[in-house]
Length: 431
Image (cartoon, rainbow, N blue to C red; front, side, top):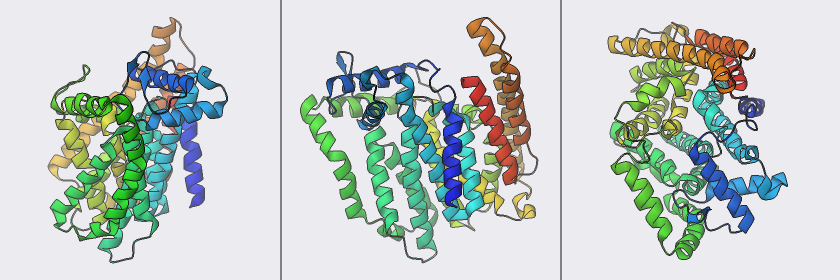
């Protein structure tokens, strides 16, 4: 079992290694995060956050501290190249992959955990965010740790079993670190999960096992020292900018040219869950049909659906905002492996069949589109054809081919093949 975790960690690192040093900054936010960290290292001021001559108070300090640590360990100081800053994101994805494998193993068994880890390591969303020096990869690691501990506490209570003493501490420590990385996102995910479970079961007593008072004290111990310092140093400007101007503005209206209507995440699902979007939908629909029978399935669906719905309703939308919900679907892929084939491949209802075929169409479009990008991007960017485009496009088409299966239960060996094909595509495309 420990070997599985080590394998998945190394596999995830390998999946995100290519292009880490050669890619230029991929968007304006990455440039701003890196520049702010660079200035932090140059000034040795690890409380305030500055971007050139202005304050940068849109996100808390956590990611800047982690990037500063990577710079310090590199020995190159403020002159460190951008790949050093990106190491934090690569590590965040690898930790999330191991975390979801740990959760899947505890809930459904070792093979289920391995399948969930392979999926999280190989989807387009994690391949992209693992190469982007921003908050989202490390936030994902915190969310997976918190939700994984919460899932095990919930399941133990449903089975009338004792809760392992370390689980509440993992939950609360991950919440505190998540707040330092990206504010309220990690707590919001857990609150929505718990609210959905309560709405279904009308039982809150299992929450007593979270050790609420001591847990909140731990969160405050992690978060309050820096919040107090930055509030004093900024004269209250941090809370005003981070909460009032950034978070609340995004909830109220589309900010930074990213205002989009509901349905955006449904339309982009096939890309950011590629190549496992179809397999995940099949597993999710089978889980939905067994919702009343298994508390583990209720937890996984409560992890994904409420968070996705809330962010569909928020006007400001970026594809990575729903990334913390994807591990809930990864767990369901692993769960489906544990069923006898006849149960796992039970016929879907009519509307579910329609949704499955719609997702299959999305898989085909994205697979063909990525193959075209593998060929066309080098020509567009350099004016010359690259022979590496051929194996990259072939790997993208192979990943799409293997990911299309009329049997909803996909064997672990095939999941591994899909992940490897996706990894070859990313390695050649990003590299």
